[in-house]
Amino acid sequence: MSIRVKLSDIINDMECQSDESNSYLNKNTGELVLVGYEEAMAAEDDGPLEDFPDWQQDIIKAAKDIENETGEYIQLPSKFDIHEYRIMEDFCLSVEDQKTREILYTVIKGSGAFGRFKNAIHIYEIADDWYKFRNEAFKEIAIEWCRDNNIEFEE
Image (cartoon, rainbow, N blue to C red):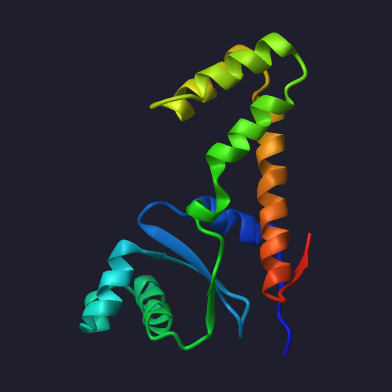
């Protein structure tokens, strides 16, 4: 049985991840699940599910399957696989105006790069260009992930 997923759903879940959460695709159902730190710890502790709300119980059950490596779930590209800093750097280098390109490339160096970058794209009125560039990069990563995992997708 082959599952088919919406690329926009994959991208959305990729964007929702953080240092304390990862997204997974259920290979049997096509369902996406975002497992946070609390659900992962609850799955590890193997305590009573009744202590959690219904919505969280389903996530904990999925987290247990993931922890037990049942093969039912595939992890989506994590924030470490995505390398958003590299995407930001590529965007800076793609800016046509040399002065703006150089300024952007300078502001992304060192601590606080993301904040300075966000300020700069608004000052130079290229925020829409950035978000289009970023969305396209995420789309490419999602497509590659789907192909690598033999997942059919629709745009």
